[in-house]
Image 1 (cartoon, rainbow, N blue to C red):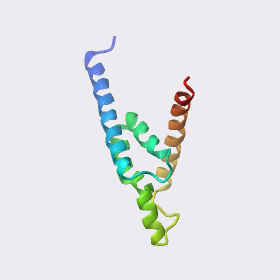
Image 2: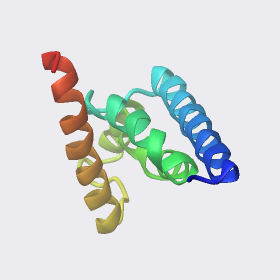
Image 3: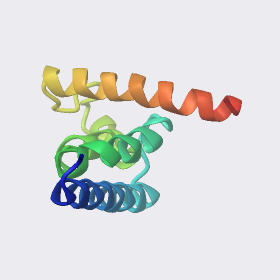
Image 4: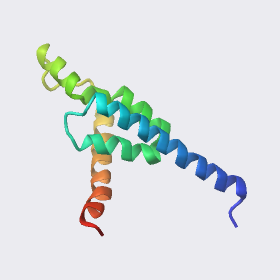
Length: 109
């Protein structure tokens, strides 16, 4: 039997993940990502990653917005976004995982 406190904790984390996803989605309305799919990836991964993904979005995800890309291009830094390799790998894995989540929904399965 699941202890009541564990059930309550899991419900709390669901709401925390939802709140983090909403914050990211609202920010993406004003600062869309260069790759449109990442506008879905960041909020989806925030549902389970909660505050860690929220921090990651504001620390590293905002480096790939349309605004940041245009600014980098104006300063001659076309392919430099300042992301460490580990962050690029985490984003790629999140991109793949979110695609696997979205694809069955798009097919209606």
